[in-house]
Length: 250
Image (cartoon, rainbow, N blue to C red; front, side):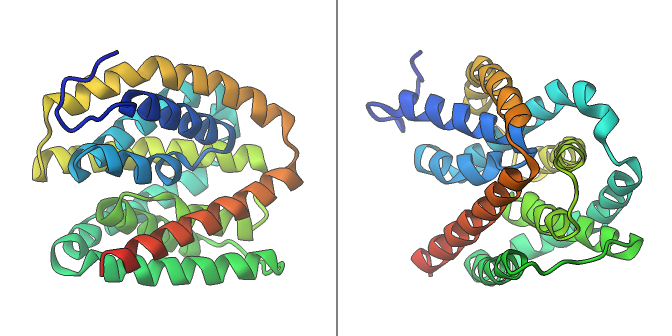
């Protein structure tokens, strides 16, 4: 496979395929994590607009391919509240994107994320209710259009409420199907797209399918305790990535 772009250097094809494969396995086995895993590496290979759109397109594909199989595990009431909240949050994310220093926003989010993860590790729990569901959905919508990462608020909230791993994965993937579609449409309207983004996304589909199969096997293998530990590791990695990235660009 040869990518026809001067921005690619020797070995970039292998890096691209490896990152997409690992991120697809992560997303399929846990219901989240594609953007956490893929975004930092995609930003090294492509322009920011291309990296974000490739991330959104491939996350959408994973959600579409999986949702029918896991639809029975989706908490429809929770999904509805998350979705309504996110619709309210999306325009605020756009306002933040064009008016606030994005590195300062990442810095605040990273510190907040690391502190909350520490509380979860110390067995801090939260009780879910409709208002909190709407707020979490709104925060996810804000982060989707501002920094392209809708997962952390959902992951923190669902982990804090001891959500069973099957329900967590299914509900999160169903929500991503909704919010990433909204985000992609928003991206196309406000920032446009290019041919390279769609060519690379097309090349990556077979890799995503392989990752989906492997991820399904891993999901069946891991128990709830391992799943929870893995969740905390992902949250810490996300917080550290945002912290380092924000400090590096200040």
